[in-house]
Length: 489
Image 1 (cartoon, rainbow, N blue to C red):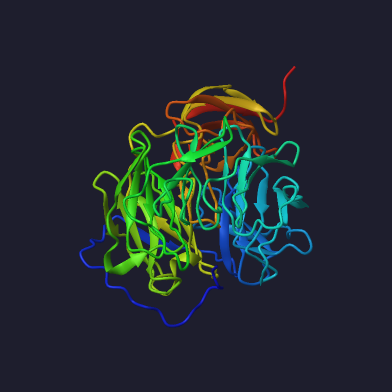
Image 2: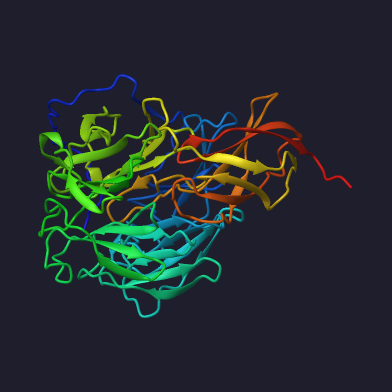
């Protein structure tokens, strides 16, 4: 159980032997929100939905990029509040294939620790929230994890039991899911794999998997069953708190799993179905809850701090090619914060948005470069479109990317494994965003061919545009399209 964000005295950490890459840097947004921002989600029209946390947790805000596509120069506006009585903190969240956003549970509601079963769904087209009933018979959801499965159904954990439930976005209904093999879901995280399985590291002794303290589990959505996975090389959690760090799927088909209140990491090979030792974070750092985000260049940005919920944070980068950690430098948020207040999310620009429950929102600029073969590709799309038209179809390869990209421990999800469609006016350079929806799959298998539908903004002008898909901050090839201001007979 976490407390609220604590400011004041920080424990300074000396990170010995870690080099600083000169190509990396931090910069604050030029226009700050003026309120405390925590959880952020990428809407499918290019905007960012952001949650106010630590106070007035019923409030939500929108960050809109400028006409060049810049989020550094973006502007803020207030979105609708969640329904009356629902003001969550530490909750599950997901952007659904139909563009809506589902928010589920909360360790806190109205700043009271209650592990609520309340939930709501946000429609960005109408700027409205609608309450969602919990799964039948559940008395808790709390800060439990969730994951959007390849078939577009959301798998939601119950924090405090073995239960899972599946949410159908089309009907807003729940059905019972397969129970995990551990005693409960609490403090674990879900990582979607390219073989369509879901990986979970247990943070309780699992009597069903060798009575182990180092067990992991795999979920198969086609059979709705959990099975025992391989053992980690070290115990990645402490019995006293059971916290765990982020499990980030990288572009070399491995999962980089940070330990909780434990100075250790592990690496899971998807192909080999085996765990191996990862680098030991320097200076006694760990990640008792904290974020990780995959950079287009293949490295993983993580935020660490020492001990359990202490200040003294340090951003680092994990290189899966060398299995090493290096200092990524810090913005103004570190070293004052603890890792648990950090939230990271890749932007369409390839930059990473960072929030920490304060009014200071910053952006990390990774070293340039994109891993070969991971970009989405447009295979087919009409070169004649009408502004305001809906349900246009774009066919492509790897439209959902090869990773959910953004991860945490248990109580923050902001996956971006879905396509965005950007149109740039070839004459003015002004950037417009379509709204994507109803992809053929939510899976992240390499070389997968599929489609997304997209709706054009009715306010955009007619003209000639370069159209591209962007997934996980990586842009596809461009296609030259003509946008008509009205239909033709």
